[in-house]
Length: 260
Ligand SMILES: [Zn+2]
Image (cartoon, rainbow, N blue to C red; front, side):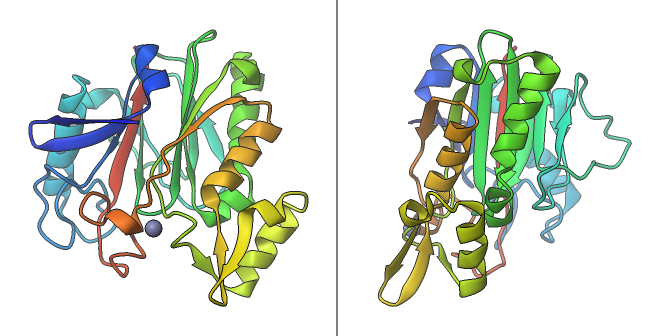
């Protein structure tokens, strides 16, 4: 991963996507206008921040990549496994649709999602020119939302999973993702073959590796080119919003992709 600083903002990119000319970014919390505890580049109005602040932060994020804010398509992320395919930007006069995965083949559409510990994943097919973003918190990871996204890319746009480039972004890491028995059991049921690679105990606590779980889901769907940021949001609260690290009172960071 490389980091870029521009106009007070700092964002991270995957080299493999950069080399293909795909504009994308995992934006840190730096360089926005929101006050504490949403300081400062907060992208979510649902956490208590003002609409005006969030709109200005969105503008700054889009400006950093020379993208038009009107090109955006975002969703109302609900920890499900529903995937939407769109060929147009979202009509901002309408309500957002409940979805945790968005796919487009339109180079003029910028896909956007918001995160604060959950795993952000970007996908791009350089052959069919199709991009996707999805939100995999632990519920979405258990539901194997990555499989649904790849299936949509294949069935709707004819993508070959072997052509896809995947990037698993910053999120809560295995060192900090400690869970109760009920969550462990959900992972055991969803990943019966790979549970021992994902779940480990340390000092009597149960840890789960969400990065590896999402990688395995993508691999099982036929994706082979997968990069992982391996940046833990809880370890780096100076750069990332973290629901756990900030004890629930925090913002959400933005992730976007546009291949136009
Ligand atoms: Zn950590």
